[in-house]
Picture 1 (cartoon, rainbow, N blue to C red):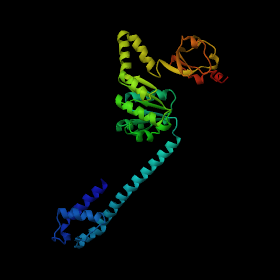
Picture 2 (tube, rainbow, N blue to C red):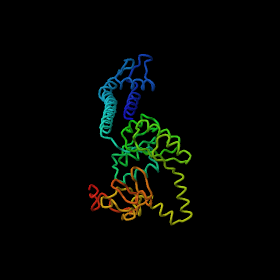
Picture 3 (spheres, helix red, strand yellow):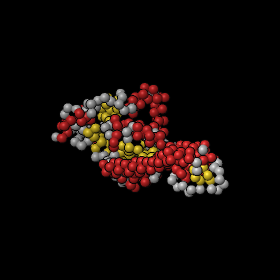
Picture 4 (cartoon, rainbow, N blue to C red):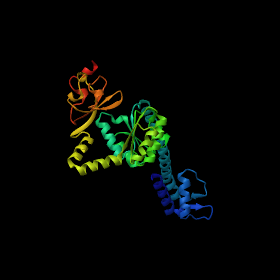
Length: 325
């Protein structure tokens, strides 16, 4: 815009004093000739077919046109250098980011589901610097940047975009695309690039769950079915629906959480634990709290519990170090 403004100013100067210039073609300078002269003069080309002939025109060229020419070149060169410098800084930032980024979480899609997933991760201790967002919408990328997270603009079905987000070294990948077919393609691409990542996918239709699992998803959540169940519970019993919504809302009221078994809890029954134990995870398998195989808690078990949201995290409780024993 600055360069265009300088060009327009130059055209006006020549047009106002067009009587002081001579065109070797027809002897006079018109509007088109003014544009031509301004263009070739500002770019320092100068073919010599239009020249200032009067003292006034020559003084104007010396003291006004020459500074305009210099300013025009400064703008063009400065803009080029700025673009190159910004690109260089971006490449250096990406290089440093890729060197330190490992065991991070990649969130594909920063819509309602993606934002809720990120908020839950943050509430559970995941750092913002360990979360990377991929979304094809510029607005979503801007929102992720405002939330102080790394974000990449592009289609996650493209392996180049996934590589830029360092999916190969990611610990967790959460896929929340708007379409189930896109979710399948993203899951296949992620699983090919990272065989060890834990992939969680949200789909709309229950019929697509087996396809997502065959594509490599470790966990599949049917969003429409989950919402439908919550709606049904709220219709049958508003109180039950309110409690379920409370459990799903992190940081308020009650929450569902997973924590390791403390040292002082080893050898006890799940019902004797202060937290309300829902399930016991042993050797990677989930058991109901009443299952006879987990009637006695063992070291290394994990507990799925219902507890107050503001309860002190297990690692900060007195005696948490007993687990080391």
